[in-house]
Length: 75
Image (cartoon, rainbow, N blue to C red; front, side, top):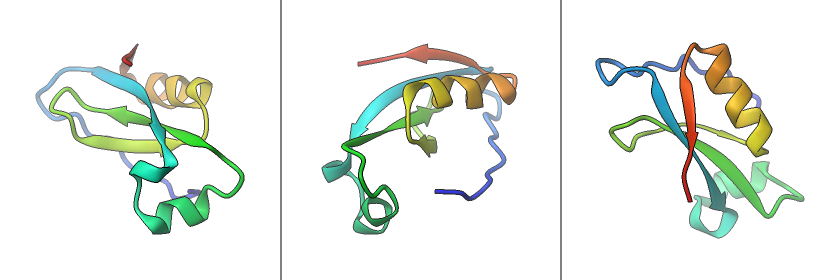
């Protein structure tokens, strides 16, 4: 969970989607790293690809903006 990633949105523009993900929907290796949390927040490209997982919504929006992306919340 402390690994840096280069986010590349390709030709899809700069919009990304932020959504809450329950831990039971994620692989075991990720659940082990998210000790003490009920859920994580995913940053998705417009093509649906998961670009990042972070511990809270505020951090997801911050991460997107720091990478010159326009975050939009989805349910």
